[in-house]
Image (cartoon, rainbow, N blue to C red; front, side, top):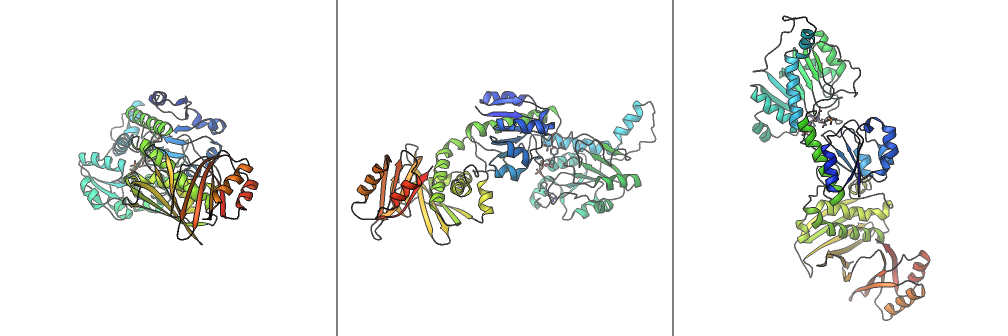
Amino acid sequence: MPKVLISDELSDAAVQIFKDAGVEVDFQPKLGKDPAKLAEIIGDYDGLAIRSATKVTADLIAKATNLKVVGRAGIGVDNVDIPAASAKGIVVMNTPFGNSITTAEHAVAMMFACARQIPAADASTQAGKWEKSKFMGVEITGKTLGLIGAGNIGSVVAARAIGLKMKVIAYDPFLSAERAQALGIERIEEVDDLLARADFVTLHVPKTEKTANIISAERVAKMKKGARLINCARGGLVDEAAVAEALRSGHLAGAAFDVFSVEPAKENPLFGAPNAVCTPHLGASTSEAQENVALQVAEQMSDYLMHGAISNALNAPSVTAEEAPVLKPWVSLAETLGSFAGQVTEDPIEEIEIEYVGEVGDLNLKPLTAALSAGLLKPLVGEGGVNMVSAPVVARERGIHITESRKDAQGAFGSYIRLIVTTETLTRSVAGTIYSDGKPRFIQIKGINLEAEPMKHMLYTTNTDTPGYIGALGTKLGALGVNIATFALGREEKSGEALALLGVDDNISETALAEIAALPQIRHAKALAF
Ligand SMILES: NC(=O)c1ccc[n+]([C@@H]2O[C@H](COP(=O)([O-])OP(=O)(O)OC[C@H]3O[C@@H](n4cnc5c(N)ncnc54)[C@H](O)[C@@H]3O)[C@@H](O)[C@H]2O)c1
Ligand SMILES: O=C(O)[C@H](O)COP(=O)(O)O
């Protein structure tokens, strides 16, 4: 039974979902704030469900010896070291839509809060002051709202703002003209042009190398005098000290921040600045959003751990729950073919071509290609060093170029996978299919037809096609105490080249292999393990 740890404040609805799916669950919502304790126990878990408090660092991942999936109940995954997770084969998934509306509503609430100074007016009124003339505000109607980032949350904010009779302009390099038109907003090519026009600027981008400090001190200075800035996206997008200074100088009339460069924010340059409205990362904190993301993350993680279905992963191809069982035998075949090629190829691999022939080409090929690449790279990288998640990264790091193509059915088999591996000196191919019994078969090696069911231990030989070879090999294996389970042969009549693929009961030792390879008919012998 897979075991999941919930280390942040998730709605307890998630616990029931895990249990119902047959996943053991440990609910320790304070653990995210205790990294040492978390590191001590993480090795026991197959899954880790988090929000933003838990920091999934490379150090934590190194200790997570059984971890298969990290599920983020929310959107931002900047608290997860995704390259480290990918390198270890851990799927990282989030819930990209569950809290978008809630967060957009918070941004709109923050816009109103700083347009009418509601928090300060509230504090003053509750202190018995009645400072009616102190809290002069501005109308939102007819004002220009500048969105930086018009993705899921930004586009909900746009819709709400249009409803409030605002003019909405947006800077987002990935926003198409068609999408902007559909949203009823104006696309702006340069951030600075947006800042020069907007009365309110609101950020809705992830924090990346490109967006870090996107509202720098220089850009704060370029904002319209009297403008207001809202950040409900991520800390680190804005130069907070420059904004505080602009509030004091009167260049900006308000700033409303839900997120800060250091969190939890116990102190910050914005605290105490005039008309600075601050909330403690509450964007996603509604009962509706928390229920949504908790249920969704628990479902996604359970589907992966129990059935291999992958959704909303940041570092792995998607596989639906319907696809997973259909793909399963093909994923296993792909990994076996890759493993065969990886074990018999001695030179550095330059290129891998994968042909999906016939009906298999209609399946979701990404997981098949990833599994095949993992099988192929495993013998080169070492056991445990690569899997479906990390294989594309490892292949890229090693300069191995992978291509895939779909082909119409040809030959005796309606559907099969053929892998062609190119090294500096040679090109080799291997093909396999799934029989109607649901089991995989090798059907061709080096262009030579044969039929062999993959087994845990196998012996592969290439040999001259001369009489007596089978007898000599059988006798030699008998003398070495190697029991033959299956024996498949193939040959190319014209070239006189032949090959054999045998299933054997146990691993063949190196000494035994050397004796086998010394048979006069043998060109090459290799002990294989799957
Ligand atoms: N305050 C909270 O509690 C809270 C809650 C949810 C999400 N968030 C944060 O809100 C942000 C937006 O979330 P989302 O769901 O809308 O994400 P999204 O991926 O749907 O949208 C992000 C948009 O940013 C755009 N973008 C990327 N690089 C850009 C750049 N350099 N300049 C301008 N635009 C750029 C993308 O094209 C995309 O349209 C994320 O950082 C997320 O973590 C915060
Ligand atoms: O990215 C997100 O989903 C938000 O920042 C929410 O974070 P939280 O789950 O820690 O509230």
